[in-house]
Length: 170
Image 1: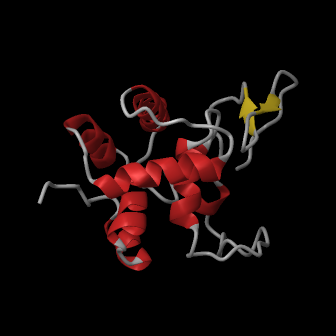
Image 2: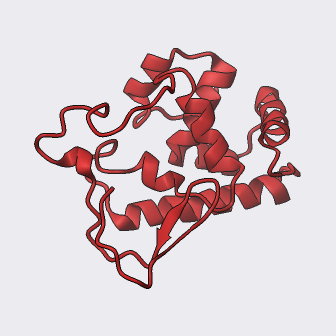
């Protein structure tokens, strides 16, 4: 993303650094004509398709301060997005983390493996209340993780249906 620098802006956050006090109209370079592909402007050794679901949920669930909702709902990935939509998903993300701690009794620590193992045990029990199902049906990050880790759905199928898939009791 590109932005005009002002001297009151600071970088903060974990695990991703974000810009505080950025002015509106941040530009997503991938939406501009001439942006041929993601390899044109940066180079990465990451495997592109294998871990995006697991890593996405880790950043959604484990870390309190994160810019993950900006990554999930940016205009390139989610046409029609707005600042308010991203803000609403960020609020819901914090509510979900609180629900997991208070209602499910799950411990969320900076040790991602421990936190995710406990969450996976909960998922395997399939003992979901209405509130959890509502969270999963609202947030594709949770649904994608459940589909991949528990149901064993194919990554390509998840990607194709992630904006329309809903959990239903069977």
